[in-house]
Length: 352
Image 1 (cartoon, rainbow, N blue to C red):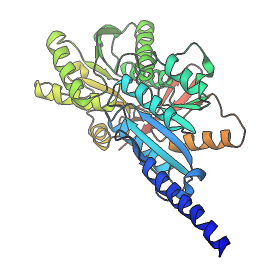
Image 2: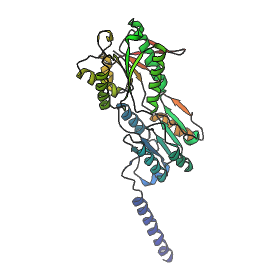
Image 3: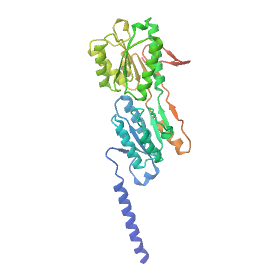
């Protein structure tokens, strides 16, 4: 009898402990916990905080879904997802919340390259590895992040510029007949820096006339707004170098609304559209219709690469510091099947 009475307080204490765990397991309203459920398995799951910069484009949404699909409970992960709504300050706050929550890994798709030293030092002090996806960052201490997974944006731009060079040559056009406007992505983002640099270098080499550079912020609405302004100020523009598909689609809308035509016949008033991503069905359809001449692919499916990096770290290995995804270049113009960048040739995937 006395042994049975002694066990009752212990049982009550265990029950109270479980209740406390349930109550304190609540998460901030700003977060979306994925893989949460049975408390008994939480300690076995790898907890990952993911700060996505926003949902400004079809590419961004595909990137988010890839990571969500990879970091599932079934795969052994608990994902805490935060959408920064294209504000770097929101990303900083999200990372600090991840640190407070004691996650095992932090994954960040950074808004711009600058301004990460302080918050990533805090992650380092907490012993949390940081994995960058998509864009790069510039920090004084390179050990503040473990690895970067994304695209070689400069190479993407170089391939599209090589396609334009070949197009101009096959049409027998003089460089002085080409007037280009650059619809840039969010200024300071790695994609913008790489793609803009490619056009700048190619224009200098080939003596192309770049008449305007405008920040379209990677959005369709801003792409339309900026293109409307460019057409009014520079009526001689006949090539638009759009640094993503959503801006290209906005540009097409602006051009057609102005009464001008999109297409490859730039000798007779049409405006040639160059773009990047190749994720949107609408953009691919525009490519098929000849409204977009060429798209430099930007592969968004980073989820499997992130899980691979985490698995390597978990097993005591170091992932590659820089992992570039393999990408193609698309066009419906079958006259250009290959482009050259440096000493390397790249096949053009013809979409018909």
